[in-house]
Image (cartoon, rainbow, N blue to C red):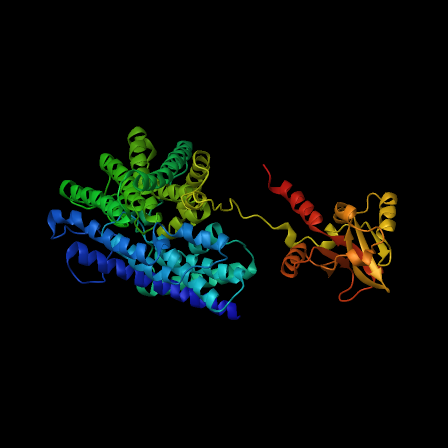
Length: 581
């Protein structure tokens, strides 16, 4: 019950964190772009022309200056899109995230996005919620599994509150964050995401993230076989683009770090200067900034068919890929989810327009392909395939979206995996030597009992027996490796054949077995899980487990078998067959 209350607390803070973070974005955006002090900002509506005119080019540079100062001086972990740092903390530091990361990430990312950086807000929200979950675990000195669960709860809660996607938030935690999926971990995450979504709806409303005007009409028509094939083609395209997106982000990062002289400040300022130039050029040629910030206004235009120019959609796709790579590659703080939605919508919409021209009789709707493209690129790039399908469904509230999205996401994920083994989230950690799990796999040691693994062949010998007598027994019982040493009807220790044979030349033949017997053994019952046995061996620094049918002090005759590292290794190797290619 107490842990469930902690999950409620984490969800509450994650939801409020999303509210405060979006308020900060609005504040910085209105101040820097419009010169007004306001917390009101609808990202689904295009920003009007700035009163600064051509000097808007310098606004992203100004934001970059503040971001570089915050990241360099207070929290280097806040640089980038955030999710890889959380994953690294889960698998390499037992869930320890510095509390200051949440504060720095909030301000730095809000400044990056608000000043025109071509990035998303979900990565920062995830890192903010995760940081609080970690802080709670550290403050209360919770065991690592509970701290990690609260991190996943904070991440899921943050993304659920941001996009009004409670189920998607749970799935994101499962696919990307959680090291274990069980009742004890899944329930707290679900509680947290539900709480965070509730807080988000109080402030942002219950409406979906994107409004589709044709919502009342049958939106996806899959009655013609060519439509199915069309979505397969879209999946292939999105898989290739997902791999390109990943390589572009990290390629640009390498370019700035290795090819551009100077320091973090000069590199980031240069990158954002280029972004500022592109933003201004778009405004004077098209009437909108288009690629600045999260870009949801453009996504809404595509979904509502307000933007149906094939050439402009193609240009916006290319520019979004370029500016997102420049923004993150030069050192900004922000997420990749929103840019993936943007590129998926523009390219998917363009693909639908082309198909509609080629097959005018099929009644193809470009917005339908835009929605599937959004899911395809998100699922392919992040590796969170189920999250992409469910989240886009929750963001559009059209059940008909499920079938085409499933086709697109499945193909996209497979193609990306062939072209780029690592996802956009895992590659950053792999590049620094921290490898991430490729799948959630059942730990067979949780269900296997020690009686299933123990070595039943052992010999009982007296502690008074000499080493010479021991050697004689070895010649008579060559297949026996373990010896239980007893004295006065009680267990005195254990001897392993190979350990003694390695040192036999250095020992006196009259040495008794009681003198050399190991006493770092544990006694466990036959129904103990192998996982618990391994954990106990590690905590007590024991090398051998004596398996018995009764607890506590036992007679030598009650011992049924022994477990050493050899039996444990053999058990793990046997399980590998279940997951090998």
